Image (tube, rainbow over all chains, first blue to last red; front, top):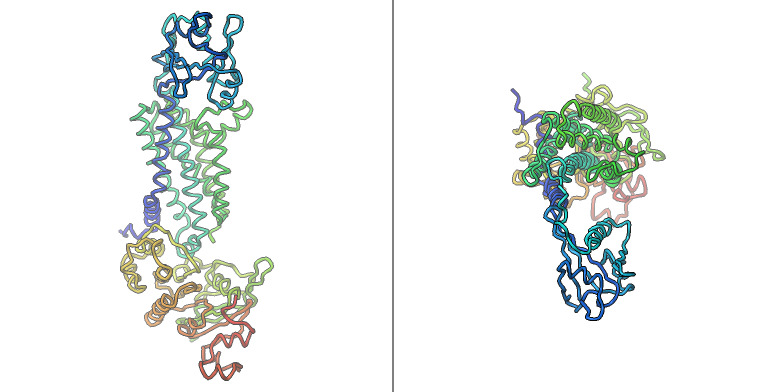
Length: 379
Length: 256
């Protein structure tokens, strides 16, 4: 038997692996960064958080009990045991906390301001709402397009509308959805895995080929009896292997930290993952087939990957986009790939549900690979 | 019996858009000969060598390597040719040994030959160094080592010492001289260093603007043409190829 270490495919695969693992930047951006991103976003969107909202009260001394006059807001705050606090610059404020075990506490910090001062603070983003007393009733001023201000209004108006008495703990009638599969992190991780495959193929294959062409290494290699198909196959195989490691680690961390599990068929997930790699490798070969300039390569990679990153529902659902655009978005390879992974991981899908995306991704990838090979410039 | 020439170039032309790079060149290189293609930058040296390498296709004319054309025999020819391009960058984060093993695998050559080559190019102590950490001269020796891995019948070196300091250049020459003694290899090297052509080659071809101005051995070239140099200079040094080139074109070899 011939020594396998003398085989060109073996040598090319090991050379590509060595090149990859010896570049710390590749390991950080390829493996560590997606894990950090999922941890960061997962923690940010799954942890109960306390919201703190600043509210301006128009007028002077509305926050302190006056012997000669009664301020409605002061009465309401006093009734709810909102203590007086003096800030470092000597301003009087009152802190009202609406406790909520399930959704996180809401804290409102009230401060006396003139209308003009309140507007300046609003413009600077230091305030969310302005409260005014008119005709013995409270008036709320806020930007109706600001969802945080709207939520604050709903909470405060509910409390103050009830004469400032909390009848029962806030959120008692709410049952937060925290079961696996319905959280943001469950939506995010499959999207990140799909995006990781796309970015890794684009940068790992496209950029690598263009750089080797620009450095005349491709030309040097094809001046030997090297099989051209072996060169491309080694590059794609190593990238696919790397993608498996990346996705596996990301999923492992998400599973340990957030308790994500695969609800559907693991063999279907495996085949879909291969199909996704075929698809993006095909695109990568087509993108890299002709140019020898890395600047053009950068532009091509960004032109293809950026729209998919934004539109394909990696970070948020593409159903937020206009209705007419959704059929087109659903045809993007990244959308198909991310939707497929999500349906297996979250919804418990199997081959029946993801069979068509697997076929489309594989066939389109193979066609693009062949087109790229046809146009490929080795010199 | 007539032997097949290593390389036979017949009336070859090549143009790029408006530039007529090679204009009707004929070359006949016998097996085992070391041939220098000498000319200034832009003379057409690289285009000619690229056509011999099979990288460029001539617009007209024929090129035969060991009696075979590229069109029908590319696979066989790739196995018997070794080449070194101008400024090839190898994979930065591979060691010198790994780079040799990679290229050796394209010819299905094992580790023993890589050891031999490492010894020949004097880089044994650098075998574990990454390519990115090699000096310019060491990289050029690596490129030369890769080009001789398959014990080529024809070796094509495109400006193998351009940009190297005199010491590094002499190291390359020493390797090539050893190769000339050891193997039955035909060499074509392009250069604009006349000293390189004088030191290494049996046959020198001077080209400019895509045509051959003169060719022959060093003695033939310097003996055939009457070169008019001032007596004051002639007293101090011998007539050189640069003097010949200046006599033929009015320019110096090293002029761009």
